[in-house]
Amino acid sequence: MAGVDDRYARQRVLPEIGDRGQERLMEASALIVGCGALGTVEAELLARAGVGRIRIADRDVVEENNLQRQVLFDEQDVRDGLPKAEAAARKLRAINSTITIEAMVKDVTPRNVEQIIDGMTVVLDGTDNFETRYLLNDACVKHATPWVYGGVLGTSGTTMAVVPHEGPCIRCLFPEPPPHGSMPTCETAGVLSAASAMIASLETAAAIRLITQQEPGEHRLVQIDPWSGSFLSVRVERRASCPCCGQGKYEYLDAMETSWITTLCGRNSIQIEPAHASSLSLDDVAARLEAVGTVTNNGMLIKVEIGEHRLLVFPDGRAIIQGTTDEAVARSLYSKYLGN
Ligand SMILES: [Zn+2]
Image (cartoon, rainbow, N blue to C red; front, side):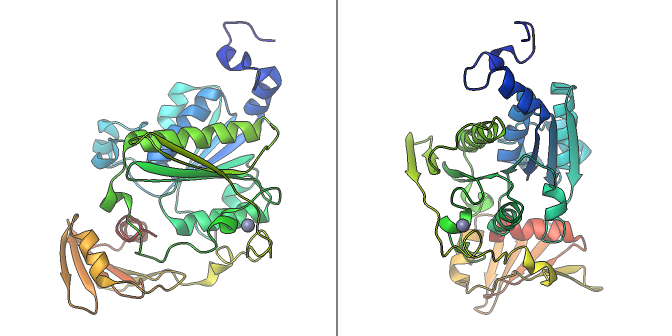
């Protein structure tokens, strides 16, 4: 047993963890998908807890408006225009030099997700969109890798740990994601940093519990709102009719051949076509986006001017992003302003 000077002494002394739990943490690997408001908190707590290998996958760069809630980043990262995964890895290495940090500056897609989760003890959701969450759910259920779902919007958030084939998966709970563009996003509705930090803490606690192989207990969905002080925890059951864990259909993973992103040659534009078409109310989308840019609605499509970019949004969820030829930038804009 390590002494009181051991860096993990306050954790080893917890009866819930102990020496054996600490060993398991040091032998474990955790993947964090999305290194924003949730992912930065998760990464820091897991690094401090001594998780032996932490892999961070994120497609964005650090921007000034991230600093309000994304706790690993600072103003210099913004000035340097660093990718979030790299900026996070630098901070985490300074926090704990005894563990391995892997930065992956990439979008998690049906093509690469199975490779990215390979060998991971647990996966944590730090994403801001349902498409990626359903993809993670498919990949993790298929490979029996536990993962922890978490989402936050406004002053509230939701989380649930998924232990494939033992408890419910995300499609047992929400069989289909909300239609593209139908939900507010962090950009249109805002995020209270205390809410994202709480959800990330709950996700981290669930991950540590999974790594240290505690009895799974009841499978619960937790919803919190630190602004009003409400905390709701409900038991969730598996559904035999669940397309994913019930019937073994991995629709998001199998969307590999779906054409998502098309570069519109010579037009400095990229088209994004969601894997599942939706039926949007352009009026609702226009009303939401008025908070972030200049919106024109001609009844067939809406045009939104945001900085140097212009988004053309169609009722089936398709969008053309003008002012870039970078697919990652286009997808990021789509996700920020249309939600998926
Ligand atoms: Zn399921």
